[in-house]
Amino acid sequence: MLVRMKIMAGMNIAETRNPQDGRFGLMALGREVDFRVATQPTVHGENVVLRILDKSKSLVPLESLGFSEHNLSELKKAIKRPEGIVIVTGPTGSGKTTTLYSILNYINGIDVNIMTLEDPVEYQLPLIRQSNVREGSLDFSTGIRSLMRQDPDIIFIGEVRDEDTAIMAVRAALTGHQVYTTLHTNDALGAIPRLSDIGVPAHLIAGSLIAVLAQRLARKLCTHCKEQSPATAEECRIMGVSEIKPPMVYHAKGCERCGFKGYKGRTAIVEILRMDKGMDDLIATHATRSQLLEYATARGYQTMMQDGIAKVLSGEIDVAELMNTVDLTERL
Image 1 (cartoon, rainbow, N blue to C red):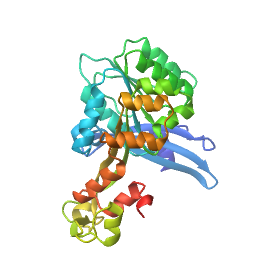
Image 2: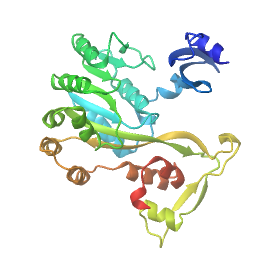
Image 3: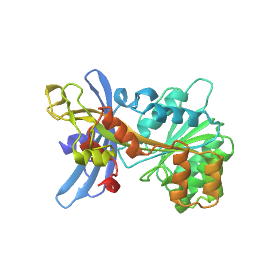
Image 4: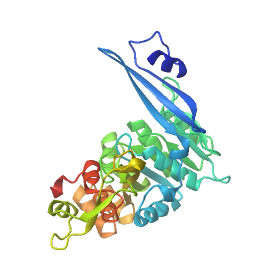
């Protein structure tokens, strides 16, 4: 099995002592599906991971991502800014690339030149010039320099990993380009100290950042078998609602349509931190996290916890899934 997969992915079947990467495509149920293959040598042989990239499932309209009306409105306001950086943060597998591709599809058109630098290109989009980062010849920082000479309106950088890439992304934003990228942080506010830690000066962050979007993916309750009951005392405490008159919440049950799991599909739990002049001033003067949070909250900022609780109360997800997805330790 392993050898066959390595042949399909164009990998060296004789090499078992070094990690390898490859990809192959298959027609499954009448649609094209890409598979990314990664091997890792272990003491008991090779470990293989397949990543399934289904274009029909992943290239979704912006309105179908599961964002609340408030978050969708905040995101569309951020996209309207003509220059600056929009950062999407979250751990591996939290849907960052899907969200960014949905944004690019939303703003894509014949009159804008969108160029991307990815590692690697996961989905090929029409009218967008996409480039792969290659070890030894093209990294993110040199790639951005090259893209800047291609007269782009919008630049998508796969990930900000080091100081050179971060500084080049900021320079692109300050010279009149819209830049979209990803970063690994726990929440939206964490992106600011993370950029400072990488080596971007605070005054440059303040001048270039448009918005930070942090997200997680939670399993949606199966609409055919979910059961409704009053929230328990513990669930009320976690959600911060009254125990005297507990709200009705849904729980997973399981049926044939969801494979007896109780969950079918996934939705995004999101927080969007949008920048304004007041926030820029706070960042430039090295304000503390609590000062930034206080200012943002006063202007309508909703945390992932609040977004998740709203989705529990609307019956999209259950409390157990919320606890697995979002940090609720302060409520326990």
